[in-house]
Every structure is written in structure tokens, then in C-alpha cells.
Amino acid sequence: MYKPHVVVTGGAGFLGSHLCEMHLEKGFRVTCVDNLITGDLNNISHLFGNENFKFIKYDVTEFIHVPGRVDYIYHFASPASPVDYLKFPIQTLKVGSLGTHKALGLAKEKKAVFLLASTSEVYGDPLIHPQQEEYWGNVNPVGTRGVYDEAKRFAEALTMAYNRYHGVQTRIVRIFNTFGPRMRVNDGRAVPNFISQALAGNDITVYGDGQQTRSLCYVSDLIEGIFRLMMSSEVNPVNIGNPDELTVEEIAKEIVELTGSKSKIIYNPLPEDDPKVRQPDITRAKEILKWTPQVNRKEGLINTIEYFRKKLGY
Image 1 (cartoon, rainbow, N blue to C red):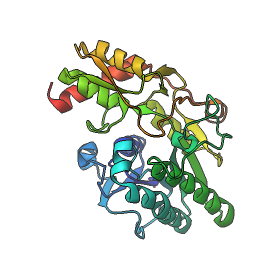
Image 2: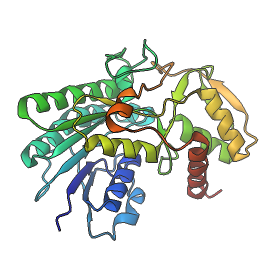
Image 3: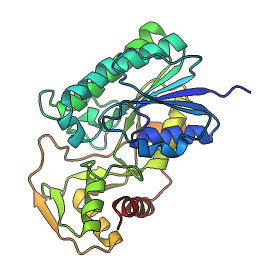
């Protein structure tokens, strides 16, 4: 019996590894492609014994060749946290442009369905709230975060061009703040930062006054939404995230409480172009994909804290 073949670029990363795992559980064959610039083999090592799983260490900004039939391509290759794209600005721009071009070329060659992992960062520091897909964004193209924001905006434009001019079946997911096991300890984003600091008993560093907001979605909910989008026929971008909005300061306090830490919260200057608000309008996902988040934040944070305890040896 034929097993559909899925290619996941960036498949050794936080989200990519969960995508690989979920598709194997659903009976797909999975080829994971990653150059490991920010990915980690530990995220997928438990999959290596599976006969339906294959790992290729490769830079997708080069020509991508995957033998045989390919049915679905998830393009998740990219540095995704400010720490990463400030460290690898040119690589971030290249994977968003050249990498997307090569992955779309593979989809065209194989007549595969292509899904682009875009981001809420395409909305920049938004002037409307919550953010809906029709909003064009407020992005600083020459700021330090522009390398990521504009790479993803270009990737969306290229994906739509391949859909319109080459007839490639395409999907675009705009991913909002997501957390869960397999996030990197040194990821630099709020949840892993706060958990690592709280478990170590160090001061919790909140940027700005802590009143900027985020909306946190647990990883299993996000992966389910992305899968539903891939299996739909929706060409336009779809927000996937949890609209439960809270301040960064509230996230820090909740993590201190859940870890039982004695850590104190201290405040540092806000980074350049850091968005003040972030909340997805998920009306489109609800209507088209029949998707809503199922895991409450506290449950998700407890799971994530437990993962970090083991990872850090606490």
C-alpha cells in the first residue's frame, strides 16, 4: 500500500521535528532536510529507527533533489528567533528567498502540495489589533528584525507567484508565538528564557516594561492546525495561533509560580522594533479548518517546564 511522501525542510528544528513525528504517526513517509544551523539532531534521533524516516543534512538554498514521488512539502527551514536571525542575518535572507525558490521548484517538479511556514512577524509592529490576514503589516525593512520579516514577506510573494503562474498547489501559514518541548534552551524567546532562568534561580529578564503582549499556542495545537491547512484547499494565508493574549510580565510571573522559583523579575531595555502587541484573529482557521486551540496555557507550560528540567538536569 502506497504511503504518501512528505518532505520537511528545517525538519530537525523545534516545529519541524514535531511535524516529522506527527506525519510518521499518521502513516506517511518522511524525508527531513536540515543543515543544522539552528536545528538539532536530538530532536529527531528517536525517529532514526523508523523505516519510513530519512534524514538528509543539506542546505536548501542549493538545488534540492529528492528521488521518487513527493506528495507534500513543508518549507520550515529558517532561523526563527531574534537571537538566531541577528546572528545569521544573511543566511536568514537566503533561506527565505533562495531556499523558498528551491523548495517551490521541487514542488513544481514533483507536482507536490507546498506549505510555507510564514510568521506573525509579517505584520511587524502592528497598527491593528488583533491581526487578521488582510492586514498588510507595519514592518521596518532596514531594522535589525527586517532580515526575518522581509524574508518571510518575500517568501509569501514567491509562493503566491508559483501558485498563480505555475499552478503549484500552495498553502501559507502565519505562525504566532508557539511553545513546547524541543525549544532550545538558548532560543532567546520569552518562554525558554524565563523557564531557564527560573529553574536556575536567576533573575528573570523582561524587556521594556513587560506590558507588551504575546499570545502563546502550545506546539501540538499548532501542528494540528498546520496539518489541517495542508490538507485543505485554502490558498490565502491563514493565522494559526492562540488568541489568549497576556503581557510578557504576566508570562514571567506565571512561569516563576509554576517552577516554584525564588527568581526576581528585572527589566532591561526593549530591543529595536520589538512588537508591542501580538494576537491572532483566527476566524479564518475556525471557519475553513474547523480548528481551535485545545491545550490550555498552564498545562502546556507544565509540560514545557518538565522538558527543560530534564534538558538542564534540574
